[in-house]
Length: 305
Image 1 (cartoon, rainbow, N blue to C red):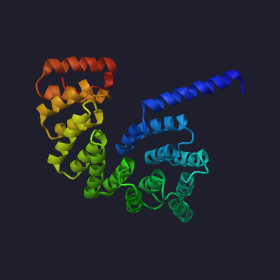
Image 2 (image 1 turned 30 degrees about the vertical axis):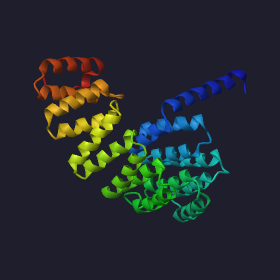
Image 3 (image 1 turned 180 degrees about the vertical axis):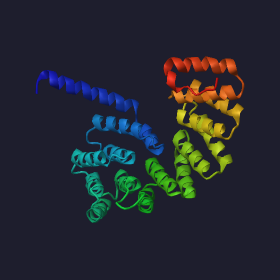
Image 4 (image 1 turned 180 degrees about the horizontal axis):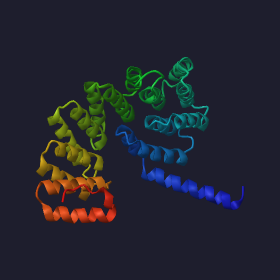
């Protein structure tokens, strides 16, 4: 290998390390919970590049590809998870996941049993065993085996009831199963362990919104924004709720908060604010914002004239 190539690889490693530092594992967990698969893929790819032995990141990256619908890439990443650290207990999980993604149900089941025995004191491995079932849809089925997923994730939580990623994973599996009560229980436990973390609060808000318990939705979405005033996912969730509830004045204020304070603001967010300004008869402000949007992306404006 030439000196130039070595330097290129070294610089590339620095770049991936910087990306991984900027996008943390907590950001990755949030992306998975919020089903932002492309974002999750970017984050966990950076984490695996920064630490090529990080099997937990590899397996979660595999899940993100699987959730996005790219089973071939999910399999490739699961195989990389095994080779990343073949002597680690997590490699048994990776091997089981490879067989699962090859639709080898009997072989995968045998390997998952071996993985569970090897991972009795490894919370990440125990969680990953459960998450293998959260995202994988067996042949002939229309959805993952969420009953099995929750059974296995409960084992992880029983082993360590203070592990927030495991609590969040179990909450998500219950949410996907349609069991809002158990989902809320696990998200509440995660929230109590880390009160300053906005993600459990946001997920609680989403669970209550899905259950049409709207008073609790508003309580938790406001709690989320209170601890993280710039958290766009929460600001957007609140604004969308108020907009579709036709609470126009409140929706306008919520979209103003999103556009003016949010850490990630899209043109679609600005378009919705323009719509709210028009509906509430704030025509000069609407026109000004429309001009701003047109300069960015002319075809996308939907504000009435």
